[in-house]
Amino acid sequence: MADQPQPGMPGPQMHGAAPPPGMVPGGMYPQVPGGMPPGAIPPPGMVGPPPVGGVPVMPGHYQGGYPMNINGMYAYPQIPTMMNSDDKPTLHRMEPFDPSGDAAILRKAMKGFGTDEDAIIALLSKRTSDQRHQILLKYNQVYNDRDCIKDLKEELHGHFEQAIVALMRPMPEYLAMELHHAMDGIGTKERTLVEILCSLNNQWIYAIKNAYYKDYQKHLVDEIKDDTSGDFKKLLISMCDGKRDERNNDPALANTIAQQLHTAGEARFGTNESEFRRVMTNYSYPLLKAVFEEYKKIEGHDFSKAIDSELSGSFKKGVMAIYNIVENRPAFFAKELHDCMWGPGTADRTLIRLVLVRSEIDMQNIKDEYLKMYNKTLVDAIKGDTSGDYKKLLIALVEG
Image (cartoon, rainbow, N blue to C red; front, top):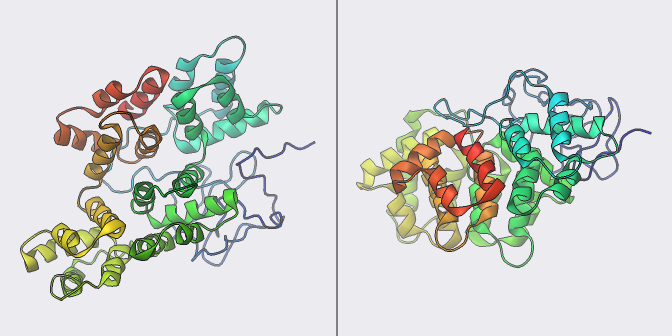
């Protein structure tokens, strides 16, 4: 009997086979505009595929498309480790990489009496999200009577278990889960919505929306509509559309756009919030940075002052987050890390998410900013706020 897909994981998709009724194949997109892997359909509500060339070309990957994993499934895209040329991740791909050997190490660490937590940390903290997912698939394939995630949950406990299980999920699936948690139940964790949706590029927005639909059979944008309101809702929906023009960085446009922002806010009585939203969600971050520089020439002060005086509530917080990410993304995340460890208690779910995601993008940059801003290393802050194997894992990811 063929192996059955594990809960929460995309099942095998055979060439020429249609997806099960009502299901969207996990992580499947057209290889190029107008073309699809056999049997694949774009998720409902998607505005289109990721841009051709948007996925890193690596062994097993094809340009503009997504890799096939070892079980013949179309997998999610690997996390873009270098979003900007000056990004410095602390976690890099392990080369050479042997998923079969790593799966055996993982099984040995959990087999028999007791668990070798140090071996689990040493292995998983040195493998990228894509590699960890391959280890999980190989584990379930070789030990076909076992489920890697289930085994980890049975062997580990507390925040360490939470962090390890998060590490083993494909990144878009993990972030979709975090967005769902932010909107589930009473109240909305707006800061989580802003942190995720306002900091990732179009490629990742598409992947997260696809993962969200696969796991919850609901469209992310519909969930946002139901759980938020007003201009903040409109801002998140615009971010969720994934229509930011990431290729147009023409500085010649900056002055015109800055004038439009000025006219929409400080130059008039009342504020045109829709114009603020349009500008902040449609133009590339490099172009927005040039726009903010031009705005300062026009008004004589930073655009942040206009945000502070012209906007209010959650919408203001969302627009300010985009501004801060554009101006200094590592500093934005340094503050997010500081805030989740500040005062009594620790926002462990946020801490895990920030360390896990940013370790493959710009954690070294964040560490540098953290030291400048708080006169303390991020590692020391984590040491003072966590303990045990949980602390060891976070430090391993942060130090690299």
